[in-house]
Image (cartoon, rainbow, N blue to C red):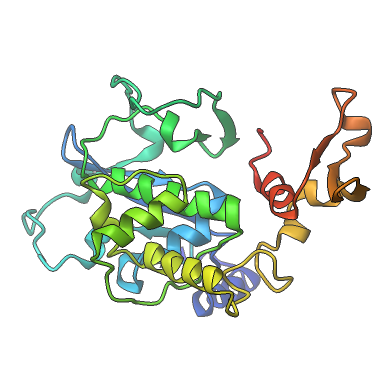
Length: 289
């Protein structure tokens, strides 16, 4: 492969090796298929590439500069060197490419599923659904279920408070107090269950706890963590199309924030919010809504 490179291609590849991209490169997660004890290579939607990489340690991610792809798995950093596999195993027998996997969803949706929104095709074999509406085929307590629960927590904080996980997430001591865990999830409108304590050992969740503490204490928050900052990599003022459609108008009891869609409007009335926080929440919602 290296011999077939042109001079320009080699220069680009070496540049990627020096500073691997976290948004333009494809990111894959190796997810264990409980049914046949294999691993499925699942591509991450481009919106979550950098956040997914931030959720793994440096030993748990591998970058291929030739294909410009990342692979992420907690098994890369396993203390058990054999990992239950013989030394002469065939890697092709252990792993199944996500694009070739037959995804059968036979389990019923979660009982808590209240939002029945249709899925949206993002391309790259990705489909999006709110976590509460996703069909679950995994057993409670499994790493994959916790991964999805973690994603829901971070996404909820992102929509309501403009939070973005820092890159990389810094190590922090685990949060062991159950009452604090319950209060934290309650603030986000999420429930606490028997699996929740495991999440409060994870770097992204602990970083979010730190962010919420700063927010409630009204102390300075890093630009990397808050999309209100113009230096943030996903500043809401630059990345949210709806933000540019907001107009502040004076109402009878103070300022109002009107979302004027102009020629794209499908109804005669105009959505108007009473607080800036609510207006920002609408800006952060997925384009489907």
